[in-house]
Amino acid sequence: MSRFKNEVAHLQAHVKTLRLAGAALFIVALLLGFGWWSAPKSLTIHVPPDLRSGSTRKWWDVPPESVYAFTFYIWQQAQRWPTNGEQDYPRNLHALSAYFTPSCRAFLQQDYEFRRSNGELRQRVRGIYEIPGRGYGDDSAMRVRTVSANNWIVTLDVSADEYLGAEQVKRALVRYALKVVRMDVDPERNPFGLALDCHARAPERIETPPPAAPPGRAASAGSNLQGDTP
Image (cartoon, rainbow, N blue to C red; front, top):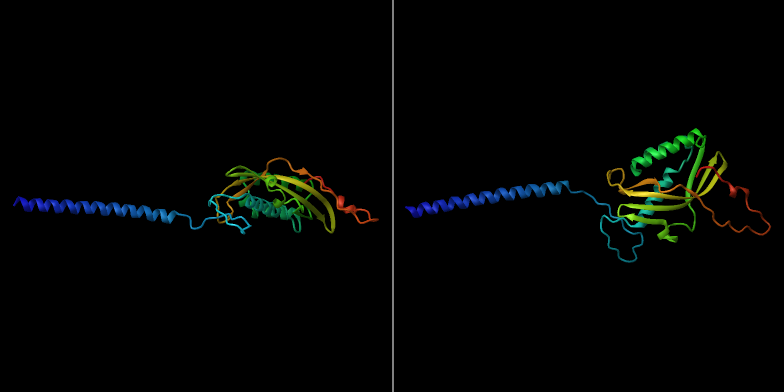
């Protein structure tokens, strides 16, 4: 009789072990399901533009050429006033707000208020473009300085042109040193995961060698236009 009791006890202990194992597997399955559900659906991978040779990148690594391209594109769009600076400038700041840090947005808003109070925006048309020969490919080490894995300083050499009606009122050759930080907080509005933190130092006026004028022809007077504010 004791043999049967021992067998029953053994089977009951085995069933209990199986139930505990099943409960443990169920908990593990719940944890795996939660991890799968919370995993990002997409990742932004920065790939160098020149793919003639193979490239191996960690998915969180942002190459300097991508940082430069992002900085120039966003800064150019922010400084573009196609019809009227008094309306275009604040509209740009609102549309690009996801690409600026909060402190940079506040600084640019103050810049807008300053320019408006000085009459530098009404009916002004403005655009900036990269000075030929001073892009990333011409001196990459000078254009992007890596401060850390999440911080960079990008140097842009641009020409800023402003028009009032049909008349050009400003041409300034400017060097901007802009801080860029990793800010991957809103992938829907900012898929780059980067943000401008405005100036690392004050903008500087720069000079480029004037183009050689044809013999017997003086340089155009409009080529020397300058303004007070970059």
